[in-house]
Amino acid sequence: MAISGLIYGETFTFTRHESGVSPQFFPRLLTGLLAFFSLFLIIRSKQPDTTGLSGEDTLSSRRGKMTIAIAFGALAAYAFFIPLLGYFLSTAIYLVFMIRYLGERKIGRIAAWSMGTAYAIAFVFMTILDVQTPEWGWIRMLLLAKPE
Image (cartoon, rainbow, N blue to C red; front, side, top):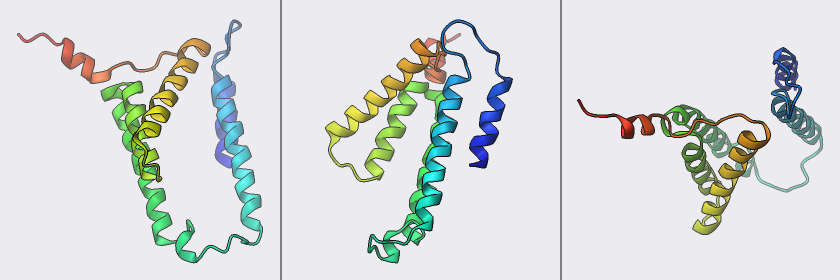
């Protein structure tokens, strides 16, 4: 909750555009969702567990902590590879990995969700928010580099 409040407050320093969607829109949308889901999890954590799951099946177990660590590691790798591979390819690879890691085994579904989500986010950023995403990163530079 505190993080979403800090980020939301930071959006007031952004330059406001009079035409179209302002740069504050997307960060405010995400911080609102973060605050909502944080509050939801806080309320849910105070309720008694009625799922009947054993300690091994919960996120507080060793396996659960490993899942969280791998998810954060994948997110860090994703952030690292965006400048190298570009937005679309990095996002698609990240989503393929995460969807597969979290249990989906059907290749068609994985490909459809990964490519569809990457395209949808790029569409929102480039057409609605008028924010360009990194295209091909270092790959483009390497392909266009002329040997001397």
